[in-house]
Image (cartoon, rainbow, N blue to C red; front, side):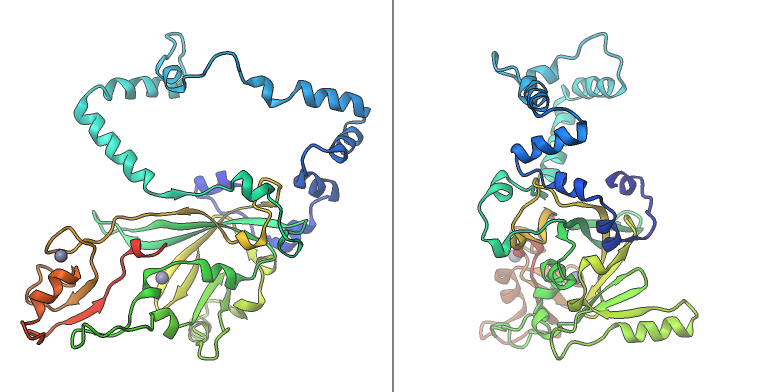
Length: 377
Ligand SMILES: [Zn+2]
Ligand SMILES: [Zn+2]
């Protein structure tokens, strides 16, 4: 189902619960694959209508271990570099041409730089330790279970022609039985860590209230339904105004549910369809489900590991516009000493420029504490 997303197509509506219920019990058992024990051999013998000895023999003869040549060490890079002359495959031709081009030091330097940038994003796959270690029974995943791949994107304008584009910020694996609020709590956004309000009059004041502690409301909008987070008494229902507006404009009936009462099994989704997550009043993120499948023994078996982060972008840090070295700590509006508006400053450059020797503010400007993306781990 991942391929559908790559081709930018959208699937039909899928009820997660019906998807889970549609699988035959024997398939669900196989998806667990609790090692190659006698139960597996028995199941395969029954499905293949063969006796157990034959299945055991097949298991040994067809083992992946036979594909390894243990006699000589494999030099992967040497093999990749030796392209046979008689191969006419398109991908091999591209590889050959690319290798020729990289002999040019200037071109090679550009490519290496691009590779380094790509490597700076973090991929995280379940390790053997996460899938096989002993887990207390209360945290053990229960079968059958559905696992979904969900991507959180940030919409933004391209630098070149200001066209809207999406940047993948995080990707998670989530379990069907998890509540939507569990995903919400894992979505990291710098706006949650902002200190609200202009601090130019008291820059030394240490504020402990982050925006997420003050403005706790948020919702997911999925297939015509708003899922509002109302866990705290001061949460606002953002959806009511939108539902009212949609009704007035004849845009169809929209529903609203409580985020903390819904699990992913309760959802109906389209794979590849952009949905919305809104928090901090107007901070919007796009959410895309790209895959739905049964949980297998290759996935983490501990419910505490979920939502399981599989990808996180590591964007470039925002540096101070004065020293161009240190990470920005302030974003300043309407400053007569700034080269641009708004402008980012580190603490060491911000203070001497905007305050005199006695700490008195110079000019009219607004200053907000800034948290760089790199501050979020
Ligand atoms: Zn946000
Ligand atoms: Zn600086």
